[in-house]
Image 1 (cartoon, rainbow, N blue to C red):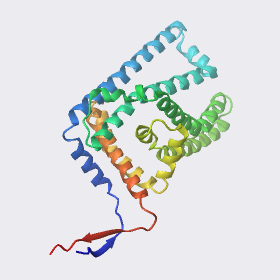
Image 2 (tube, one colour):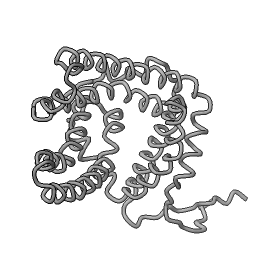
Image 3 (cartoon, rainbow, N blue to C red):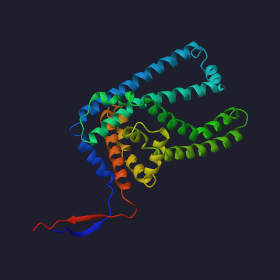
Image 4 (tube, rainbow, N blue to C red):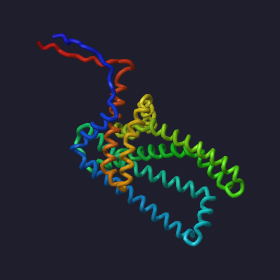
Length: 287
C-alpha cells in the first residue's frame, strides 16, 4: 500500500522540563555509579585544594604574616608577581580538575547511549589526549580572566588613591563596578557560546582544539537563551547544595550533566534539518 501522508509539523525541541525529566529517567538505573564517580571526583578536588591551602599557609608563616599581618598584606598588594602567581595557580588547578570532571560528562554520555558505565570511566581523559582537556580548560579560564581584567586594573589604580584622593577613588570605584558588571556579562555570554566544547571533545578527541570552540559557537548560535534558561533552572538546587555543605552535589552534578548532554543531543537534532524543513507524519494503510 502507498503510505498516506496525513500532515506535517515542524520539529519541536524538548523543553527544559522535558529534558530534566528525561535525564532523571536515564539516570534511574545508573545513579549508583554516577554518584560514586562524582563523590570520588569531589574528593580528589577537595584533597588538592587542601594541599594548596596548607602550602599557602606555610608561605604566609615563612614570610612574616603572623608577626606583621598588615605589613605583609601591603607588600603582596604592591607585588604584581603575587597576583600573577595567584591566577596561575588557579588556572592550573582548574585545568587539572577538569581532566577528572570531564569523566562525569563521559559517564553521562554513555548513559544517554544506553551503554554500561564503570567508575574507571571517570578517568577517561587521562588516556585520550588529556592535553586537549587541559588546553580547553586553560583557554576558558583565560577568557574569564581577560573579561575581568579591566576591572582588576582599575582596582590597582584606585587602591593608592584611597588615602590621598577620596573623590578620585570614588570615581575609579564607580568605573570598577561598571567594568565588573560588563565583565560578568561578557564572561557569561562566552561561557554559553563555548559550553559544548567538552562534549565535542568526548565525541571526537582527535580533532584540533580550536575546532571544538568553532563547532560549539556554531551549535549555540540560536540556542543561547535556551541554554541560559536551562542553566538558571538549576539555581535552586545549587543553593540547596550549599546548605548541605556540598553533599547534595553528589546527586546534583550527574543530574545537571545528563541534562546538558541531552541538550547537546537536541542541538544536533535541530541542526540535522535544513532551515524551514518539516517532518512528515506518515501513516501506512495496512487494510
